Length: 295
Image (tube, rainbow, N blue to C red; front, side, top):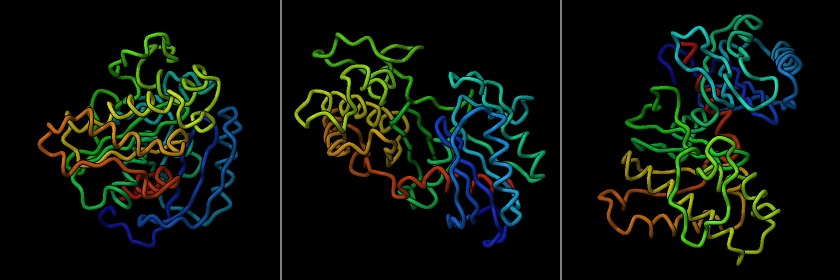
């Protein structure tokens, strides 16, 4: 919790997704006091509906926004708080932070949805007591947030973990990938739309002996190994709709060990787990963004 902010201070949170906006009020300890979901339609309609909901709640002290992206996180940029060039129709250059700062007249905390989920899990879930972890969501897209030495990793933009290139399996050469930018990057091979485009069904609807399960698990295991090898973190948390497929987490855990080949010096401390906060990781992180903004 940020210095100087009372534990009972009422905060607002928005988890802005391409399909729905989750709105909530709560406190920095992760307690959610009220919650509401609205469909993501046009920016004007969606933001107005969100504003009206908050206007009918007890007054909040600050608002945290965890948004789909790409977004501008550089505080010195005139586009800070904007969604930038997104494939979501009508949402490019949408000034999320500015709109709610004007309409609600409160401080705004702003970050990516996956960074917020990483923050929520780090402080109140799977990352408690650790120095570093990553959160990866595997769903409509693949994205991730990284925490090293207790702090979110930021630099030139924000991490785009779904857009690195895994090593293709020798038995997997016929599919070009589903990412419109990179073809067979991780998102192009293992996201929900990639699975559907390739096999015509969701992973959960394919039989357990179908090749999709092994291939998807293998590519996600490479992502986990890469994070362990490059960042020396202790835990990778895997969330999102695709991860709800039966047996997938266990396959990834096993494959991550195989990829690592008992080499990494910290391997005994490194684990792959589901979100301890479940579907509340993102909105909990948004409350923490609000808490930081209120200080």
